[in-house]
Image (tube, rainbow, N blue to C red; front, side, top):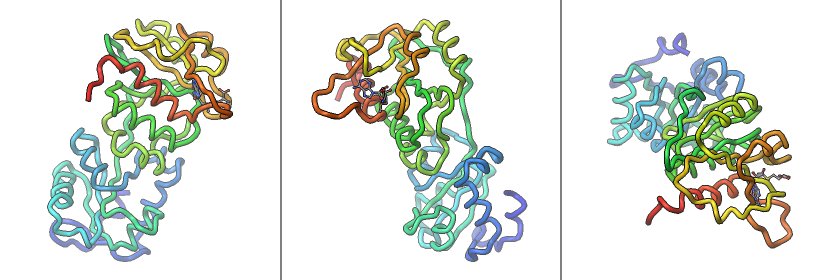
Length: 279
Ligand code: SAM
């Protein structure tokens, strides 16, 4: 996007963008599409909290945009100065421009553009008390973002996306993480790679399955654990379910067929982390 950054007016060390026709607006809007995100290896995150979370983790930031109305606000200007010091681009925008970029009527005052950053599977090593969540074929970005946030909340170590999954960098998914995306390592791998990794890992592999007979309320342990969750439609494929050391179920009493994937992951994580979490 750098070719669209040089012709802007400069004020106070940053660029001001007031026209909806500015080519940078089109560039940033295009990041709502997965194809563009993949090509540029970038994604958009909305809100000062997200930007602050990213800065705390030294996450590579491409640019920060802030609303003209936020000019002079200490935390916004500090964030902008940090982005600039790290080589990022800083732009002040009208609310209309921010709304167009984020495709929202009431845009956040601050929007960041971040580099995508996945962790290689080979870097994942589990030790005592470590829990990783593996999500097979997850399709709903809101569920994925909620799982990432919950993984962060319970102090689990990271999330492995197995097989064909939704994009963790979609605006909806990023929003649902509430900033935890910057604190929780994400790994992507195929089903075969995951099975080889799980077989070689000292961690127990716990799968969740509606046909399981093992009650999830017996699973808290300091053993390193990979929690494997099935996708929203079909649940865990047989091949993955059969590879698990334990298949567990959360009992249900009403007429619902199953729990929402993110809710089930939360319940499982609170059981697995029972012995280490204190109020
Ligand atoms: N029709 C799917 C099936 O038969 O598995 C439902 C999938 S459910 C919406 C998505 C995932 O959430 C499941 O694959 C499982 O990992 C988890 N899940 C949902 N309810 C569960 C329960 N009661 N016990 C264990 N896992 C559950």
